[in-house]
Length: 384
Image 1 (cartoon, helix red, strand yellow):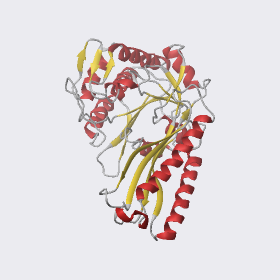
Image 2 (image 1 turned 90 degrees about the vertical axis):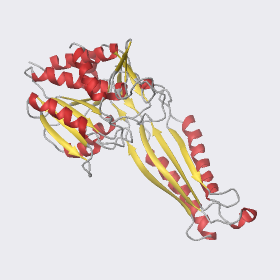
Image 3 (image 1 turned 180 degrees about the vertical axis):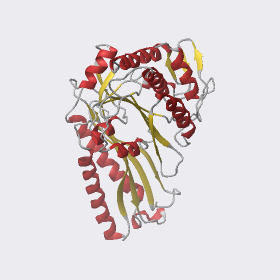
Image 4 (image 1 turned 30 degrees about the vertical axis):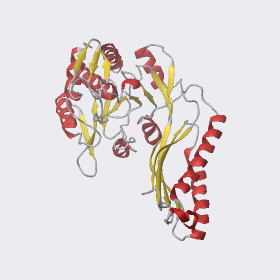
């Protein structure tokens, strides 16, 4: 596949400022208008407000099977970053193609659309599916509506490739993530009489101490050395409480996350934190009714673990070379496709995740060309 077409498509996709807080409908309309004349069977799955949508497109024969190419349309914000060019205009600088989302992950989407155009001119023996989702960057939120729509469908794809940036190495596993919030309710008083009140920040500190103990135990427990961080992690990211130094604070919140190895069950860790919160609440309410600690899960997505001998893995190795199989720490929508739909899934896309979310984000021409070639060979494989 010539690089010129993916480049032209990437130029158009970057021009849509699909930051997660904004609508992605203009991009989805562009993609729909591109695919409809190709004979693609198109399904829109909007959010409740109608401001965003997933798009599922199928080319080729009806019925189940085939390959799904999946990616998200949203990007992270650019505010506060020192870009040297317009982030929403594709800028070539040597081998680098700069723009917000070039790496994460509109480069893959451009190659997938080019592959769809190529597939439309062929007689496919197996269907080619495309899934473009929204709000992946805030916790794989949007794709869930599309997945719910597909549960029990008779024409599910047999294999799935998530095009997150992996330097086109085949990723067979990634960690899961659970995000949660601790809310601590104390009783305020003048700080000169601090023992007469209940310090909500201290309650949060007690919860944090339990998390740190858990982390020490996890680091000393079972490991998977294929990951850069080979164990499950518990991380507190924000803590907010108090209004003035001389007031014992009556409120404090703390946000934390668990990034678990696929073999570890995060619900067991959460049960321990729920128990700790309940114990702190019993002690607090003995002094001040209505005080204590609660823990609420905000979002979660599962890890991914695909056997090395799975058909989707052997297919990628045919298309992309016999490179090493990797496991990554960052999450993707792949775990949801595997868990909710039972579709064997790998992650493989152009670019380096270390170049994502930064000012002057880029994908290299070489990576884009290699991805286009890989998907072109995929079209050959599913054609007569």
